[in-house]
Length: 190
Image (tube, rainbow, N blue to C red):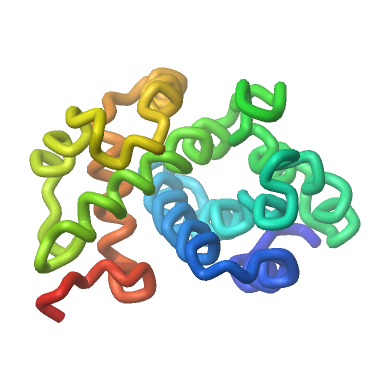
């Protein structure tokens, strides 16, 4: 495989991931990665594909996350750079693969960030469709809101990217807005 396509990523992920919330998380991260690729002038579909596949082994091996990813993806023909990017999103949590490329740093950053964006959007009548960074930042500052999302990791990722949390959040929100329907974030007004 020369390049991981979104279609191939979805097909591979579907072999391992059946839980609705994990599929939705894959879609959220994919949308965020697509937007980050746009920011960096990279291939949006390629980054979206890597985002879709990033939690490939999580449902079956939550305690050994990413330990069961490398070999099966390599056997499926996923390019080494994409496998490395996927492994790097677990840096300092469950892998020692440090994010070095823009794609790796972006995946590391948006993985947790999409959870807070999703939670913020769900509280709004119009979902994500009218979510502004200002509103998001209020939720971000409330440590009790979406408390399971690791803000320290997100900030470390922003630092790696040389970007401010507001800047990254804005890109991620816009990316997720573009997929609002698929992400079930059109709100109760829809």
